[in-house]
Image (tube, rainbow, N blue to C red; front, side, top):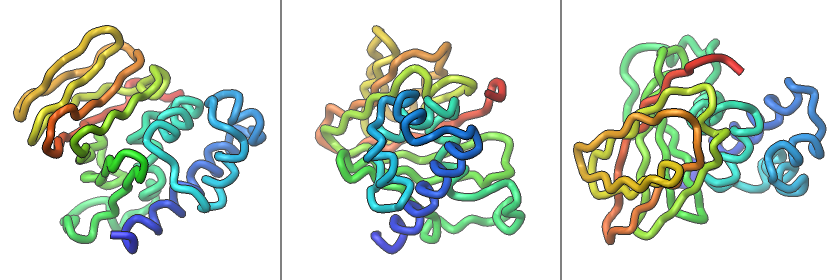
Length: 196
């Protein structure tokens, strides 16, 4: 799997640097906006460290992008006409893995598709929190495909089984938890509500 993950880590590094430079932010400014240390941001931008899902959530919130948007941008740009339509083989798809939690994410749709669809695999016992800002400017649905997901939507806790969906409302702090003893597989379907 490392031959699939490593190129994506380099693409994430380039995307984080591009988003920071596009805003003309220094490392210190991004650190202040995200709550991620300058040293960690620097290691991520150099491709020396694979960010965790939580760190990606903080960075995407600072950029006013959803995590899915930040990863989708890393996986391809709108100019990638080669992957804009047609068959995308599952075996060839890039997967991003959070080594701290085992969370795995695979982009299903191409960069030109009007909605972002991703498949997430959350191992037993994994817990991934995201700040409210990571959900700004997006409309999102979570659809549990296999297993059970305990979803903290602000102060409300939902226990979702295979086949259940939840459409997310206004941004708030959210936590994805697999408190079961088997992997949970779910899809995230996202559209942009407004541009930052």
